Amino acid sequence: MSIWESSWCGHELYGKFGANLARKIENKEILYEDYSHIHALYRLAAGAQGVPFLPTYSSMGSDILNPENDNLGKAGLRDGANPHIPKFKYITYKEPFTGSEILLIPAANPDWCITHVHMVGQEGTVRVEGLRFCDEEAIKASKHNIIIAGQIVPEEYLRREPTRNLIPGYFVDYIVELPWGAHPTGMYGAYEPDGSFINNYFTSTRSQEGFDRWAEEWIFGVKDHQEYLAKLGITRLEALRANPALGYSSTLKRG
Image (cartoon, rainbow, N blue to C red; front, side, top):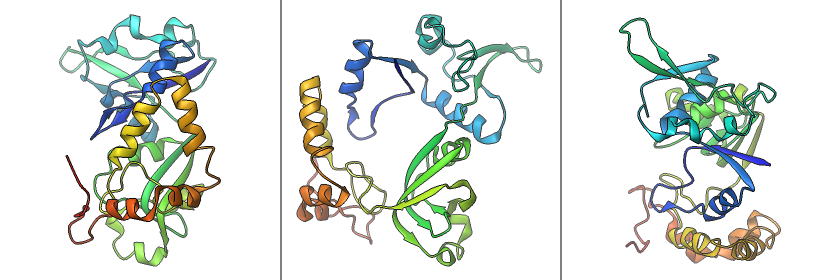
């Protein structure tokens, strides 16, 4: 059985759209483990720092910590056989400084991390414009990294302002140049999320048959990324493109 371990599946602007995933979880085709957002971040942050856990008070008193919701534990998978499944989802610890209880959240070290960024240098230096969220922690926690970028630029350009860079090249295994590669989500300052495309995906994939039809059209029905962009059309893409002076599209119809 496949395992999905995450904190949420959705988009900040459009809410939950993981109907296909939810259906497979309900049908017991996928075993899932749910963490809060901050717990997922702490797992990656611990992995990035090379420590076995990080402490937090977050989510105490919530159902995230209900033993009935420890699905990997209930399935008998926390036996140490899989290095990616910690022996405990969390540990409640009475810390010695104040005597209060605190949670210890285990580190996560993924085999691979795939990150889409604004630009990457020819030697792998990564730059992300705008909010970075947990990109740095995820990259540093992972054993291998693939960086997909809107454009590949000379390293000399990135070194002019080194404080704006996120990750040095020695963390990166592969780099890929793929303009519009974040579609249908957006890239800050470059282009907006494609709301109608995201809505179509959500409504089309509520059933397995709908998902199969959608996948045949948008995944298997195009031979490469260029054909995917051609199918979207230049008019649609240009409506999403951000005005460089404003940082967002001034032509996209909203609401």
